[in-house]
Amino acid sequence: MAQSHRHACLMLLLLAASLLHGADLKKKTEALATLEKHHTELIKLSDQIWAYAETALKETRSSKALADYAEQQGFKVERGVAGMPTAFIASFGSDRPIIGVLGEYDALPGISQKVQPTKEAFEAGAAGHGCGHNLFGPASLGAAIAIKELMTSGKLKGTIRFYGTPAEESVGGKIYMAREGLFNDLDVCLAWHPDEKTRADTQSSQAMVDFIVEFKGKAAHAAYDPWNGRSAVDGLELFTHGLNMLREHVRPSVRMHYTIVKGGDVPNVISEYAKLWCWVRDSKRTGVEEALGRVRQIAEGAGLMAGVEAKLTIQTGDYEMLVNLTGAKLLHENLTWLGPIQYTAEEQNFARAIQRATGVEEKGLNGAIQPLEEQKPDPPGGSTDVADVSWVVPTLHFSVTTSPEGAPWHAWPVVACGGMSIGHKGIMHAAKTLAATMVDLFENEKTRSAIRSEFEAQTKGHVYKPYVPEGPPPLPME
Ligand SMILES: [Zn+2]
Image (cartoon, rainbow, N blue to C red; front, side, top):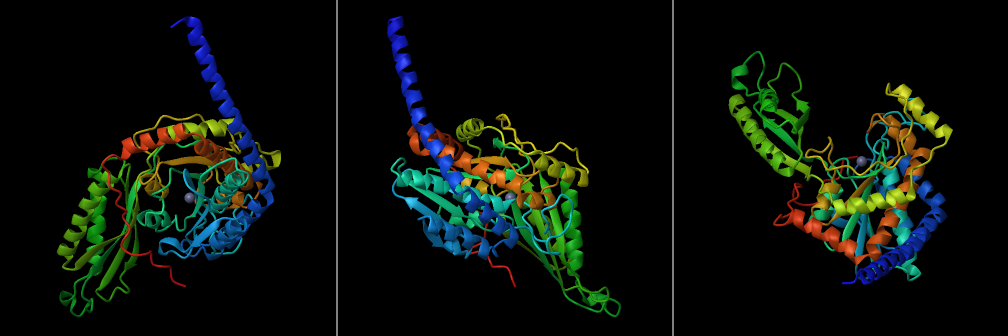
């Protein structure tokens, strides 16, 4: 082929690519304008959810606020899905492609905090948004609304779905929704999370299993006839001893932690009942299964030694996150296109005051877009139920700065920042990134199929097996 002809072909190709990109850019810009139009309402929603601070499966007002807003915006809303009153799906449009976006809204108990850079409860003993989930739902729903408006004006075709997913901090609402098959027909699913940095996530998360170990013995007077008793607390102590010895014989990536829920009543009664709550984590589900097998034997052995009955019950568990690199690149492109989050001197001072109060380096807020990282073999510590979704459909995940670098997470600094402009900027940045990336996903069949092929290669031959027990999760008391 003549050099000039090849050159002409290449030019045509480039032109076609840039024209397509140009059309997409216009749609993205329109989506951003829609988000600006809804700015006040989205912030109001977030502040409402921040103040409600409802914990797992009790997010009645929070989920209602989001579902009602989706309905007002013309979405078809299905409430109480997968047997959970606070789970819902809001959808708009018809046919394929179907793109989903996740939103969480549960708070954490006992970490209520005022919007100020020193520790002081907003309401003593109450819950607080220490994981920034008050920002999560409104940003994701905002992005879905921006896509809906492009559909209404005939610029995008397909279906957009917002998933209201409760109880991330406890049983993992998404696992129940995944088991019901509620994500199965999605082409792609997107999620983000508040963080101290802004980046497309290329690291996985830890797989884990959450279980209860109970011991049932026989009561007797501890001084008069202890030989007639069988102590449940003996069983518990032998179990924790065995578990702590097991630490030497598991891979360094394994984490095991427990709390004693019930350890007898009074010293002068041989305890009839003891209960322990335990989590085992590893980089992959296979590692968790291996460690869990050993833990089961330890529970059984402890029961035998103490002459009591031992029972292990799985409550829930997460897979490790499947990272879709094609998707991560797409997210990174859109994050880069939007540019870093800019903070005022006042916001930086607020962040530095928090860093001073928590004894970490006074670096302030980091709104820069982090470079795309190589995937490491072991993820950093932490698990999420988004990971279960990632084994059912290709899932793209990113993080947005909403809190000062180095300050503790699941703690008061996150609550404080989530109730003011630092968190609000995070909402808008996340919503814009989601909306821009979704424009690409709706518009480019090639991108969707590249994401799908990567997912299919990763999950080939795998059958999704959620850890959760039969039926819907039990609702908390009160
Ligand atoms: Zn979280």
